[in-house]
Figure 1 (spheres, rainbow, N blue to C red):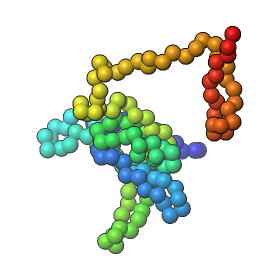
Figure 2 (cartoon, rainbow, N blue to C red):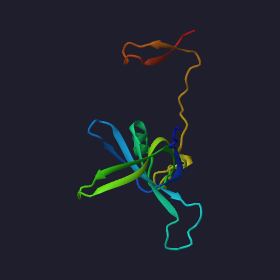
Figure 3 (tube, rainbow, N blue to C red):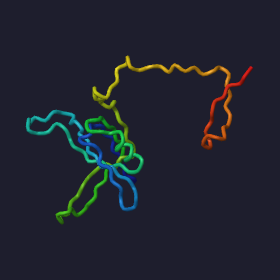
Figure 4 (cartoon, rainbow, N blue to C red):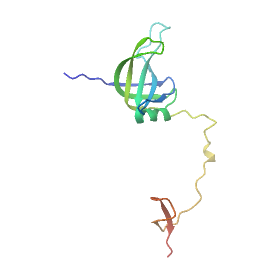
Length: 153
């Protein structure tokens, strides 16, 4: 009988993803999600979230590195993996983590007020394009680019 290893979780990033490149040239991002527990703990000293380690490879890792920041709500679809390694201090360690196959950002990024431009400053373009136009290859431009010219008459 085949076994199933599938994990689907949503949570908030506890820190910005850490992007690294392996010796073979593959990109990998490590990140951690705070996933709220279903029930509040009875003990007030106990945390009400689980902190889940995750890793993503390739384009998914690059996407996370470019767009995901601390506090963003993230959905992860992947598989559970355990691995052993020897730390810098010589101690053998075991880690259980989610290897992300698919990642989705589930909220909008928070925009800092100083970076946000007011709507009143947005201007529409004032140039008009003639209604009669044709596209033609222009040898003076880069290969594969087009320029717009107007026909007379």
